[in-house]
Length: 314
Ligand SMILES: [Zn+2]
Image (cartoon, rainbow, N blue to C red; front, side, top):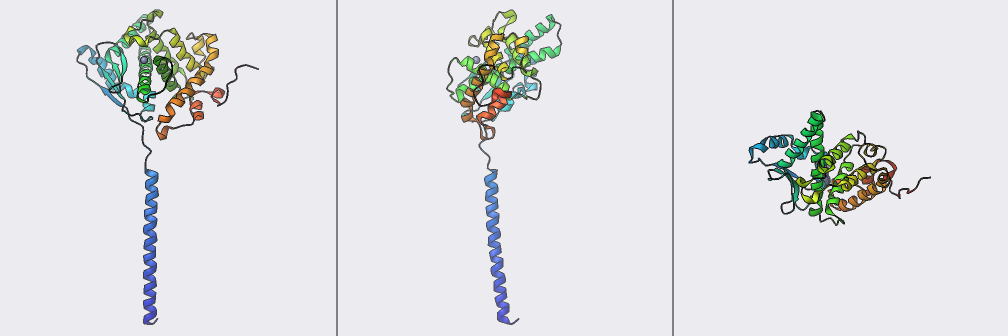
C-alpha cells in the first residue's frame, strides 16, 4: 500500500469510527429518553396519614395501646386499598384521639377522620358484655369490634371524600356515606373467598349502631348518624343485591325482608354505577378502571353485565 492509499484508508477508518460514535450516542440518548419516558410515574393518588395521639386520661391508655399497636386504620382492608387511589386536594388524616365523648367524625377544615378512644372503648365494652351474657369467646369480641369499626371508618371516609372531591351527591349525606361504605366493601371483596367477613362486619356494625334490643339508642355516634332499621336494611340490601345466592344469609338470618330483597339487585346496580361516575374522574391513573370492570368487581354474575337487568322472569 502506498502512502496516499494508507492515508486514504486512515481517513475512511476515522470517518467510520466518528459516524459509529455519533450513531451510538444518538442511540444511547434515544434509548435513555424512551426509558425515562416509560419510567415517569403517573401522578400517584394522595396518601392518607395515620396518627394515634396519646390520651391524657390514664383510663384510655389501654385502648390507645391496643389501637396504635394494631395500627387499626391500616388494618382495615378497604382503607388500605384506597390509600393513594384518589387525587384528593388535601391529604386525608386518620387520627385516633381522646375526645371527651364516644364518637367518630370527619372534620372538614383539617380533612381529618377522627376516631375517639372513647368510641373504641364503648364498642369493646358492649362486645364484652354480650360475650359474657351469651357465653361467647374472644373471637366474637374481636369480630364485633373489627366489624363495627370497619363500617364506621368507611362511613367517615365517605364524608371525607364527599367533602374533598366536592361530589355532587343527592339526598341525605348520611345515606350517601353509607352507600360509599357498602360500595367499598364490595369493590375490595375477594369473591373467591367466603362472604362471611363482609356479612359479619355489617351485622356487628348494625348491632352496635342500632343499640341493644332494637332500642336504636345511638346517641354515642352523634345524632345525625342514627342508624334506624331502614338505614341498616339499605346496607344489607346493597350487599345482598351484589350476589343474592352468595348473600342469602342476609335474608334467612339477618332479617332482610323477602319483598325488599327482590328489589335489591337493581338498587345495588344503581348505587354501584352512581359511585363509579362520582369517583372515577378522581382516581389515580394506576387505579382507573372502566365502568364495566368496576361493575364486574363489585357485582357478581350476570347482574354485572352492562345492560338492562331483566325486570321479570320467563
Ligand atoms: Zn355520617
